[in-house]
Length: 202
Image (cartoon, rainbow, N blue to C red; front, top):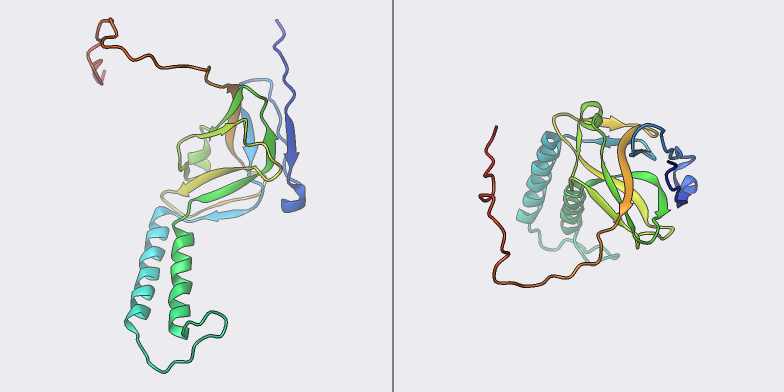
C-alpha cells in the first residue's frame, strides 16, 4: 500500500549562511535529519561556569569603584567605570542564553500537523551536547520567512565544535492533537493501577 505524500513548502536561508544542506526523506526510518547551517563552538558546562564567575568578579570589582569627577560619556551619560561594568553585564547575559544552532531553513507545516525536533541517537556521542528543552515542538503557525528552525543545546563534559553541514538532530511531521474538551466528574469509575511508579523498578 502506497503511503500518502504530503507536499511541504520549505525555504532555505542560503542568502544568510551560504548554501545550506538540503533535507532528504530517507527510505528507511520515519525521521528526517537536519544539519548545522554554520560553524559553531559550544563551551562545556564547566567552561561556562568558570567564565560566569570571572564576569561576576569583574562586575563586582567595578561596582566597588566610585571615583568622583570622572567625565561622562556623551553617548549615554555614564562614566567610563559604569560603561565597563555594563559591558561585563552584557557578556554575562549572553553567556546565560542557550546556544541556538541554526538549521538554515523555514518551513510551512500543513494545517493539522506539527513538527517534533529531537536529538539523533548519536548526537551526544559525536558532539557532547544535549538539547536544552528535551524536545522542540513546531506548530503550524510557525511558518513565516523569518521563522527559522534552530536546535538549542548546551555542551556537557568538554568544549566542542560543530561544523557547517554536520548532522546534528532529526525531526518528524505528525498530526496535531485532536480537538478535545474536558468534562469534570466526581469519579472516573475505573480501577486504580496503583499510583505513580507502581510497577516497580524491574
